[in-house]
Length: 143
Image 1: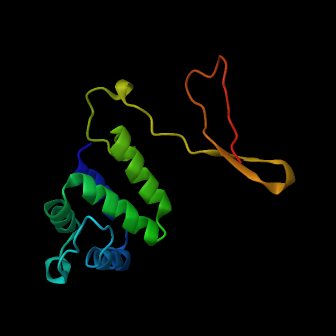
Image 2: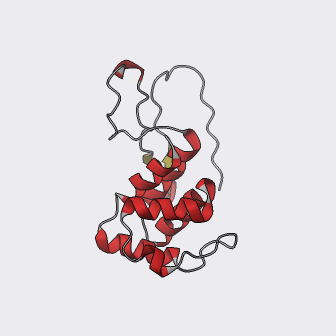
């Protein structure tokens, strides 16, 4: 999936007040390598226009990094993680159903991590294994 669509998908997870806050973050220094966007360029910008302004100002890679950073600052960690994974892996979101030619070749979305209780109340977050689950699995725990 192309970067503008990924960014738009992330912004579509925000309601209007949250989008205003997101745009405010774009007007202040977020990452050292990226200058803020002028308030007047974002004041009345729609989601699609905001994405366009970000890509024009920062380029695609930095626009993704800034979006992730802002989403994390706003407490939208799940959306930030989803955006990072989709950008890194090139997977498409499960809500997108524009392709109807071959549904059997569609890759399922990544499974949510499974939580397991550890001794003395600690929590372990482990991946959910799908597909071929037979064979030997090595799991390393770091403290």
